[in-house]
Image 1 (cartoon, rainbow over the protein chains, first blue to last red):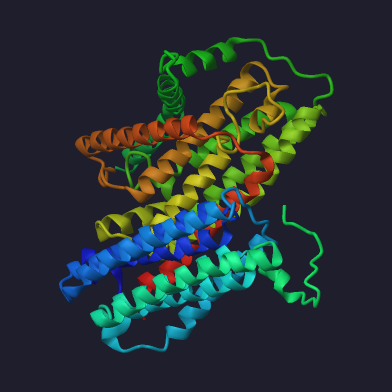
Image 2 (cartoon, rainbow over the protein chains, first blue to last red):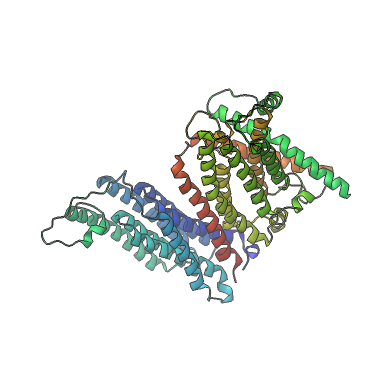
Length: 232
Length: 317
């Protein structure tokens, strides 16, 4: 389906989805923790905007509520909690040195192509519009996964996890015009509870290995002595 | 009819060269006002060029003939490139003789001779500037081509006229790929024209200069040609960005009314772009040279995402 036959709102959904994908890339390559949290907040706002636009096309009225919930939770509350955690953990000026950022970006580009290849067989005529969005959302999910693999810092890994959830939500909203409200509420509170638990874990991890670099968890010692190598 | 069309094309090419100092004067004026300075008149660059043109030309003893011909080659190549970009009217014969890839090639030719001339005299600054220019352009060119391919894939044509015609017939569409290509082209234009996050156009005194370092040995009319070429290059990128992404207003036939409207439209678009450039230069600081690859990698990523989002989101099955 080419762009010329779409309504302006459908085009707008595509534009927002593409921007969300771009923000995934920026999140992946962003070395500063606080800036990454802000980018995650913007991605949440974009997902909320997609939800609002789909609601405006008039398919499902409960999406208005869903958009509001997403905006409050993903764009405001969770970034605020992460920000507060970063402040309390003394990570406000934390910069992670990325090893081979260009390679990671290329891997992410390959993931985008892979996800397009994966959804390409869905040729059902009415599905073409949503199929494209599903490719983008799948790419967002996979890039979030890639971020969890490549980042060593626990907070950055949580950001990757949360952006995976953004991708899933994007797919749900644009492909099936939203899940039932009960499911959405459940997922939202799951994410919120997960966030609280992550916060607790951060302090636990830091207490036991004196750092949030989770690569250090690979080194098991019986005495609990960890070589003194603090990240710069 | 054919003769009139060629005359219009010639007039447009001359207009490119004539407008370029005005654009740079406008950017400088807006920048000065934003920084609470009075600023020189918009016409100051014309006076500078005139002054340089009537001054005596001195050439270093160690300079080879290449040093003398380089300004002419650079100026002609960039002017030719600018003449192939539709400025006022769309379907001119000059625009039909070269597509976007030739345009990029002409710019590369000019850059090649500029770098050679920088190294020719054998001063440290010239060689340093040339090496930096080549570093930047080696990274900027793939990004530019990637952005250009996005446009070409949408229009199924590598000709600028084809791209603009396609855009005009489609009407207003929100294309994610165009947005990404737009971002990529802006970043490339900033890097290639030596504007502020990459190079500081207002100084001769820093060890960080790129473009100015290659021109240090030039004087008189040679320097005038080099500076004029740089101004035309800025105009070229401005027109490229303004007319490819927002082609509305450009003259599609050659009636006087349409041509006047086209001229007014392009002047308006360039004034907005110039003011935006000045505002950006006021807000941003120049970045370290070793951060430039990251900056241009972002441009490349934007171009790549433009291509991907075109294939994934816009073509469909």
